[in-house]
Image 1 (cartoon, rainbow, N blue to C red):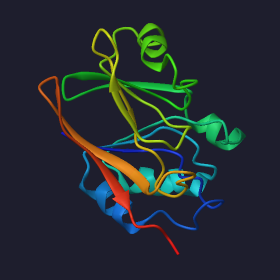
Image 2 (image 1 turned 135 degrees about the vertical axis):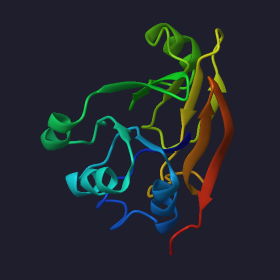
Image 3 (image 1 turned 135 degrees about the horizontal axis):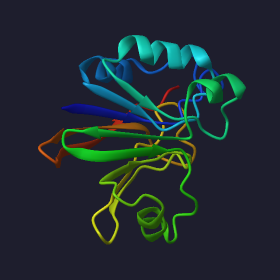
Image 4 (image 1 turned 180 degrees about the vertical axis):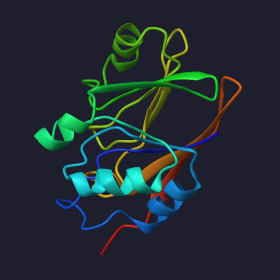
Length: 167
């Protein structure tokens, strides 16, 4: 099962459109996971239409329309792994321990908010993944998203994709 992870798309405030490389990856994925901060409903509609399956949450910058359509936390079993998706996890210090406590029985936690790519494993085995942002790199050198495979209870081929800096 091929998964695409993205977050913090912030359309149209940070970009008019989603990057073509991200949309191509959406088309190739079995499941698209978006960890919030869409800021507009047309982007949600676009990803729903292009995705075979969309697992998504709202973020702190998402208004009432998106909050009506999306949960704060989403959960699904994908490729034999228990996934949870949430926008915010708090400060980096202590994140692994805090998230392992908050999401027991979860194998993979996808989160956003910081725009900083993150890939760590908490004591007890919870994998924490933040794909960064494909449209708002903030202080990061690149716009980013992640792809990976989930098969028979194992994550494989976790890859951070770096997009060219827009001019």
